[in-house]
Image 1 (cartoon, rainbow, N blue to C red):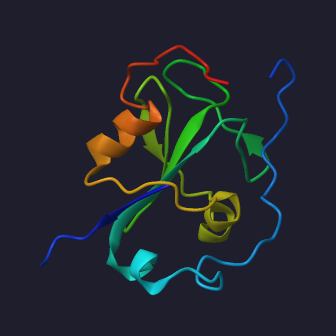
Image 2 (spheres, rainbow, N blue to C red):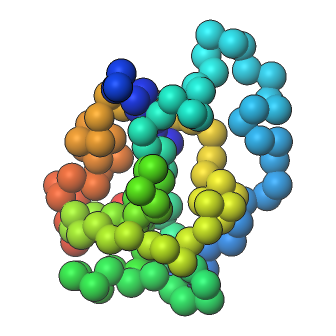
Length: 132
């Protein structure tokens, strides 16, 4: 998952299930100097390798037809889904709680969205390829 500080001013695909309930990032004993202030980030993103079921419907890319391997992004404007082919769309059916349930621990910090895309492979370099 990637965070950015705000500027000053398999063969059988299974639907995604929410992650097991684990302590929220705020309740885990993380040293203060390593904590990320959720109110000071402009976006959060994580890769989701499997199929993504939102409101009972499996997500498909309208551009290339992909059915798995997503980048899920939350910004102040809402939640967005990005395919490896670089097609990105807003997903108003995904609730913030579902985003939080699917989100894992922070594994890196990106300076900007372009760096986050490149580091997770959603910049078009792997368009048409499913990574395992």
